[in-house]
Structure formats: structure tokens, C-alpha cells
Length: 359
Image (tube, rainbow, N blue to C red; front, side, top):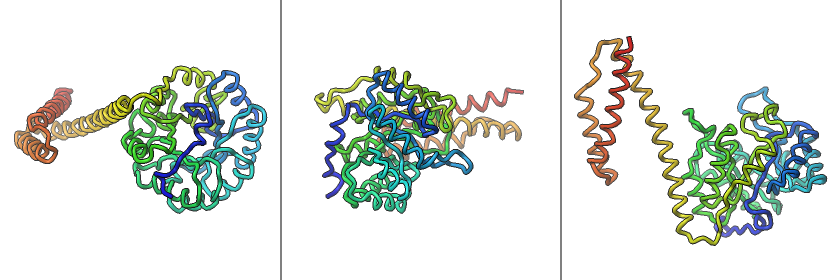
């Protein structure tokens, strides 16, 4: 059996779209129960309550989760409010404890997905379970690692599989905490259309701004749902406070989502995917141009300090030759590429000129 043969009927038994919500971290029994109660009272379309029991942190000495005691709080949430429950597992110990506590859904985090040894350990501990297991994309943009993690789970006879798109780390600072890189996620979805894919807007955005837009965009291109961090008092959360929302805001967000009819002809779905990819590339282009202009500023300062003229004819000659070369390589119009480079070069000169006259 391979991944293309995996059929995930289990996801159809839950509300559509599948919404998972709850705090980034379990902090106390009271916090867990209040968050669950308020999600239930808002009538938000949430099927699964999530909470981090163990929290992998980037730096030491941060809050790393309450540990096994938090599993008892998840049990109470299930008993009192009827939610299925979910948590992240990062090693065999976590798996055994979560299975013993009868957690309904497990996921493997981005930091774990990147390490095949860790995934193999988790897969072997989960061997034969019929509980759904989601795999978040690895922190680095590597589709093969993501696919490989699922193949390791399937190799241990774990068939109720799903994935979570939570964005990818980048050295450059952007408006996202983790860049969506929609192309990678949509490539996965194209290869394995029967494996449910959820969006994690909380980790993509890193704040409360844009959560609704990212979630809607994911639903537009055929994702099955979302996992959204929700806390009874987000500003006081012990981890990732800035990206968590209240149950009431969650209910409003879900209520405003437009769910696409699965019966719509493939044209609309395919068009939505192409538009999403164009938007993603446009965003990357703007970020790259911004970085380029910052370098132009540094060049302008160096020219000013050394009394060197802004316009360098030999540099423009190199640019035009490069445009000709790239036109041949890409099959694009040489005229178009020259226009683009000319516009960039002119803006670069303007940036440097503003530095020169800034006495």
C-alpha cells in the first residue's frame, strides 16, 4: 500500500469543514474547561478540542508544557463538553501517554517532521493505531521530508492520516511568522488528493491579524478545515499569546467562512489554486524587491562616503546583458525582462540619490 491508496473516510464523519480549536498550551484545568465551555456556548462549528501538553520551544528555559497531568484535563473536556481531543506527540513516551489517556487525534509537529529518526520512533510507538494522525509540514520547505514522514507512518500500518499546513521558517522577516509557501502545500495536495489537509493560520500569521483571510484562502483551494489556537484569555497565555483568539472571536471567524461546494466543477477549484499561487509569488516578489532596495541603500551610503557617482554605465551594461541571457533561458520576452530590470534599476538610483542629497 502506498500513500496514493490511502482513503480517509473518517474525516467525513466529522463536521465539514473540520475545525480544531483550543489553547496553544494546557495551563490549568480551569483554563481548559473555561475555553471548552465558551467554545461550546458560542455554538462554533468545532469538532475537536486541541491543547499542547508538551511544548517544544526554540530556546531553553521557556514554558515546555505541563506534561502528563494535562492529559487528565483533556479527558475532562471530553467528558463535560463532548469534544473529541487532540494533542501533539514528539517521542514514544508522549505517544504511549496520549494513547493511554485515549486522546482521539494526534499530530506530529513541524520540528519533529524534519527529523526522520524522530518520526520513525513515533511511528513505531503508534503502530497499528486507528486514531487519526496528522503530520505538520517540516519547518524547512522540503516536500520530500513531509511525504517521507507519512510514508513512515503508513509503514507501521497507520492509515488514518492527515496533514497540517502551518507555513515554513525563513531567515528573512516578513509579515508572516511562517511563510505559507502555498506552492509546496498545493503540490502535496495535488499528489495526494485523498489525504485531508488542514490549515494552521495561527502559526502562519503569528498574530491575530489575517487569520480569517488565510483560513478562507485555504478553503477556497480545497482544504478540509483548520486548526486555530483559541484561549479563554489570550493576552495572559503562557505561550504564543499574540496568535491566540477568544472563543467568541473564533465563532465569528468560523461563521464568516464561505465553504465551497464540493460538487463545483473542477474549473473553479483549479482557478482558485492558480490565483493563490500567483498571490504567493507576488508576495515573494515584493519581499525580494524590498530586500534589494535595502541593499541599494547600503550601496548608496558607500558611494556617498567615497564620492562615487550614482549611475555606473558599465553596471547598466551588465544588467542588459543579463536580461538577454535570462530571456533565452526562460523563454520570456527580452523586452519584458528589460522593462522589469529597467524599472528596478531606476528605483535603485532614486533610493541612492535620496541618500546622496540627504546632508
